[in-house]
Length: 368
Image (cartoon, rainbow, N blue to C red; front, side, top):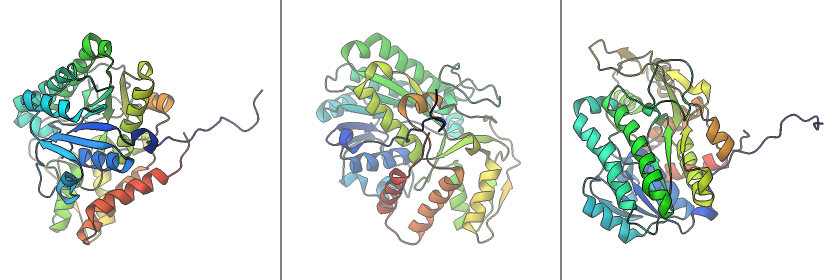
């Protein structure tokens, strides 16, 4: 019989400083938006981070503003340079590898398909091949995307066992990265004691993103110039989430993979709550209100390459097996994002703003 109190709640887990303290982490893509946030969080947790990435491709960049290069052992190079990649990993002797480096923009993949394939497919393969010769690594996490699924433009969220695919070069390249990771896991890495998982997240937002053709950076640039934001597809829906939500999932997955490898060497979704799946137009309306100063937007009526209309993730697996759940509502995610940009605009320290939001995030209590 039950106790009359309803289902037992469990607290949403947060990354453990006890686990990460002293761990050597090799992080690719550390100069990007997500990579910079993750590098700072890992350092805060006590990990020793060695980054491997191209130099930042935006100016300004979160990596430069937070002075990350002075606080970690970073190498600027390309994943196509297998010799330097191998030397960097062998020199770092990492316990854990997290692979974020990618060409991550859908529209850029139409303009540069071969470069996208080279980075996202062969770059991943190069890293996995080097891991075959690395004895120090116990766990590796390959970050792909929610767009790796064969998109059927339906209303239901995608689960990890749904078919992979991709109409555009970016989505297709990430589906290939998933397949390549599975091949290396089953053919090579598991046999030599390296456990490997993949992680798929939604449209990530947060302070410090200045990439081209991304909604939040495009809004910030236009707002600052007192210009209307030009929106390509206001009716397209996406699973919006603050960067700290998926990053917490990545860290929890690595902890689980490292400690109980046979139960977690698989793909995991890290998407937002269903109510956070909103249209582009809905997001821009909210951002405009938060910014004020009569911020507004208009629709780009020119011809555009194909992009998915409907996209959502089912994260039940991460919730049940990892105790992970997004902590931030969409309203909070937008508020935290704009707080960061407005704070930097008021000459607050960018790195401290990141650290303050990490502290605020980890202190949040929520049941799942």
